[in-house]
Length: 118
Image (cartoon, rainbow, N blue to C red; front, side, top):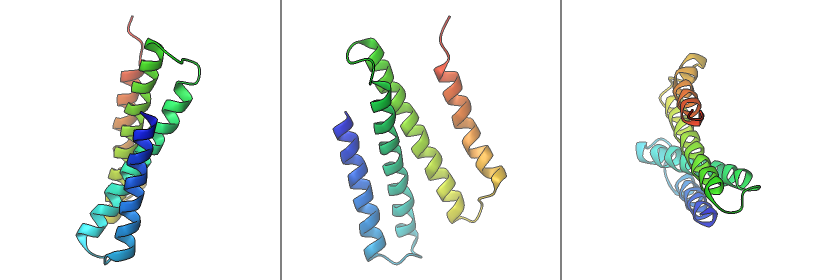
């Protein structure tokens, strides 16, 4: 799983580097590729770090599976939040208030999904 995430992150970084090196920075396609690639790379690297940290104690079994799922979920949420914040920056709509309104639903979703069932 971690090797696949490393490959996804490397491909996203390569796509961003290629776009920055070869495209006009004002084009909408190049902006979309850079924002999307950066968000994918961030999400994949965050998932790698969270999975590595979560599976350090549990080598096998349901606890390890839960830690992997938690790391994937949090990495995906982080990548999506980065993409939305970067998109707001590109559109000149980035203010502290909009960042709070973008990030707060991800935090609430993580709190709700992380609570233990009784």
